[in-house]
Image (cartoon, rainbow, N blue to C red; front, top):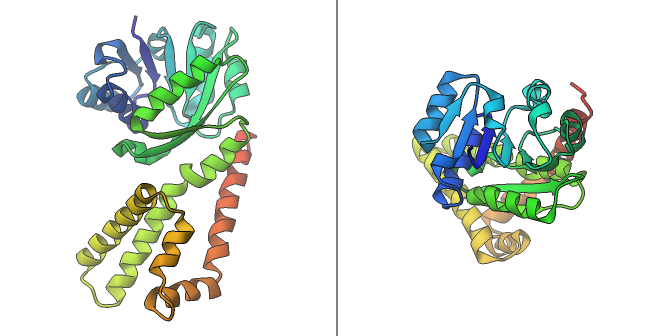
Amino acid sequence: MAELGFVGAGNMATALCRGILGAGLIPGSEVIASDPEEDRRAAFERVTGARTTPANKDACGAPTVILAVKPQVMPAVLAEVGPVLTADQLVISIAAGIPIARIEAACAEPARVVRAMPNTPMLVGEGAAALCGGTHATDADRARACELLGACGLVLEVSDEEQIHAVTALSGSGPAYVFLLAELMARAGEELGLERDDALVLANQTVLGAGRMLVESGEPAEELRRRVTSPGGTTEAALRSMAEDGVLESIVRAIHRAGRRSRELADGVE
């Protein structure tokens, strides 16, 4: 019997498994992943060296099972694997918008469920995730989930599952906001006369460098922004234009809208 089972062998599962193996938490020989798609199984095996199977139930005998499937297929997956999951197993779900109660209700026995919301930068080992324990999850269960997810980035524990909606809106969807900013910066650079490739390289490196400064300096974003904004300078002119155009409040409203959509999905609203 494997020590860790993945239900779903897509990009997120593959990245998480690679991080777990790289951190030495579990050997590859003790991992099994299931997926109906042969291509995904082949990619998972190629990257991790772990075993795969087309049968979801075959991955559900491990002490720890990670549900790493798309939210839209989760109901079918839960109907299949819920009856075989036991109270002796830790079940970690990284499916967006699927409440803990729905997973617990699908299981024949009192399930030790931990729900997590990671984001796509875990694919490069720089993810941000938050997690919350269910009714029967123990302190040790939450700690184990933190350890496994922490192999691919930062992990925070929240005490109230309702906060997962905020996490989804902020960091779950957050990479798209940053990608959009980089896209628009590059477009403006090209419009100002730069070659397209040069504009892309400069925009991408600026996002990378600013992110590293933000994390490594330990300074608040507000302070770093203040330092780079010289009175009467170019940065001040740009930020004033954004404020006058309502960009700042628009971004905040957009993140609130993402949070509301997360709640809608949890309630089954299409």
